[in-house]
Length: 69
Image (cartoon, rainbow, N blue to C red; front, side, top):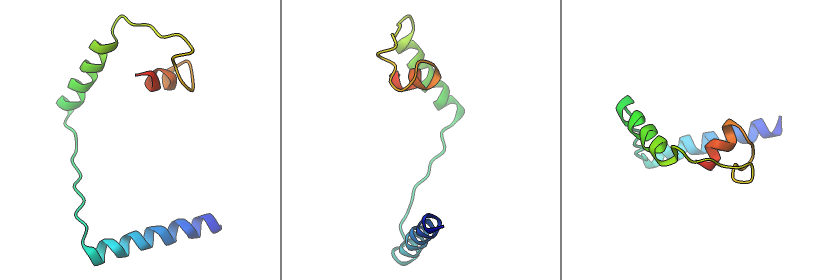
């Protein structure tokens, strides 16, 4: 319960600061073409390479591979 109140308090402070100081947050969505280009770049960078269990940090399957990449 205390953790929830703390999170609500922090969110309230951030909201108030945002209103008072009018912070401009820029958010930009990635297009599908940008995502495909980035994935193709990663594929070409790691294509044909193998990693052993010591190189795949925190797991030997999906998460470990993602951390390795």
